[in-house]
Amino acid sequence: MEQPIRNKVAENTKLVTFNLEDYYLEGNRIQVDISQWLDQGFILREKEFRISLDNHNWDQYKGSYVAVYCSTDAIVPAWAFMLFVVKIAPFAVKTVIGSLVDLETVIYQEVLSELDLMSYEDKLVIIKGCSNKPVPQSAYLDITNKLISVAKSVMYGEACSAVPLYKRR
Image (cartoon, rainbow, N blue to C red; front, side, top):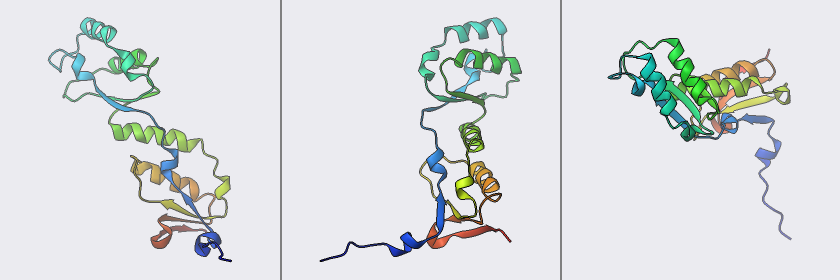
């Protein structure tokens, strides 16, 4: 009788993999340029700005993560971005000022701040390096900072080629 093939290396390893992709929040990411509501893309005229925002189709952002920015060199007062948030808040899951990378950074900061890492206590942890989702560099720094307070060691990459980062003395 044949025995099933077993991966003894995988079964006997004490390594635990932490994959940041597992914490990626699904949802549409949208970048909105506020200059579309400025006169000639540069001049904010309050009355016209408010009317444009009132007439905008906000429903298109339902369930989305939104990064708002200005693509021109216009000086946009803080209240304009604040008014944008007031209008989009009932539709968007999250809104930040900046780029899509800034958006992912904020999302990951929030997700990682809520994690209970006690399951990694005194473990040999590898932070998985390759990702198919947009994981910002800052997320790698954030999780490393958190893991070094609980893990016995922290590495980066894959089990076959991990880069050691931290080992508790």
